[in-house]
Length: 250
Ligand SMILES: [Zn+2]
Ligand SMILES: [Zn+2]
Image (cartoon, rainbow, N blue to C red; front, top):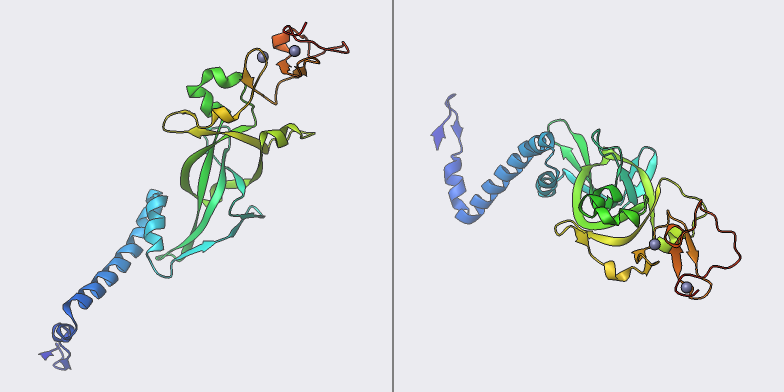
């Protein structure tokens, strides 16, 4: 026993601790220390916008971390699996596009404010792809997206709205084009900067390119192949003859 300043007897914790096995006391100390550290770090990580580390630390801290199936953004209920438009900041004029993979909230311990984060799988747009593949500009549609294997956490508040991503054939069947309807047929490898599954896409015309739904095509009445207006010399976007036969079939 040791004496407190007031002269009262107080328990000697160093002796009490010794009664437990040394391993378990060390573990408890470690856990308390870790929890305290995590609470400190959450604020710092939030300020640093280090979302990935924040999720890691948050998920290890009891009572501060939760996952959800849906989230309400700008009055719209979004679910895991939905495609979304994301604010790209001031330096880009196009919104980013991705698929919602995970919805997480982490309570910031000092203010008790909820930090809401979403894990997003990214799509690339034409403007990004043609930086490394300028020749592909001819066949890539303005509404075409390229799926990547890159996932990242973002603040839920940077989500603008949901959007639709169709297959190429579904997109071609649309009667009207809308700015929030996209299509995807190809993968984009961000590391190698090349398409992942180009073999799966059919090529058309004498120029041998994947179909671009933004351009006009005519079908040959003999071979049934499709050709760009420009590649078979059709001008002004009009063809008045009843039948068309390509130069191979004439
Ligand atoms: Zn062509
Ligand atoms: Zn033909």
